[in-house]
Image: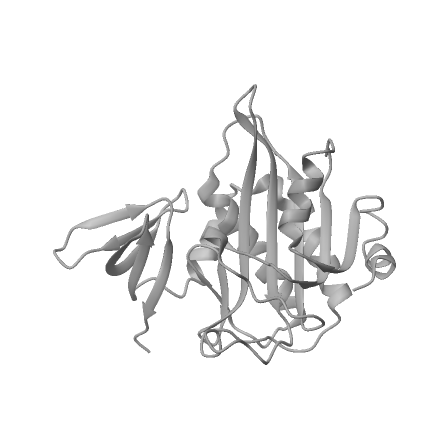
Length: 257
């Protein structure tokens, strides 16, 4: 990963707001630490070739070996003074990312697993973590810190991930990350545009499938029926009742192929 090359590809759009390191604990941690000491008024990017402590939702480890993946976080000033619809943020980021991936890998059929994972051939190739930084005085979201991890050419995974994760294909990582950060910076303020959610629904890998949802330590089984207009997931339970989740994650999908 090379800051000068990424600067060139983005026409210096992120000059003085782009930080590239060979190795960090996690780009998300670095971005949040930066935000605690700086006033950020424009999208600011942190990229690493290798993370020693990359993490995703609920602090779960994200495997981040050197040279084969793409790991970056962006500080994004809040696009509005109004309360953000948190459920739509991650779904929109997922769509923006996959739109770029399709340009680089047009033959691949990427899908979304609610709420924050990107899949290919029923295996995970990417994860998204969106965290809000609150202004305590106004009690509104001052900034977002979105972290993205993608397996590009990663082939060797720890035993626990071997059957669950895969890489995509070789590509120019500097060019790919430049297109990704441009897409996010240019479009995130329009995150609640219904077209993003519709694209997310169309490529959902869980709708119509039997799933298990982990919420507050409890696993709830049912059939994924609908992704609501606020990004929430509605499932049908065994007794015929429905339940809607604004948070949580799908931990298992029993695919009917």
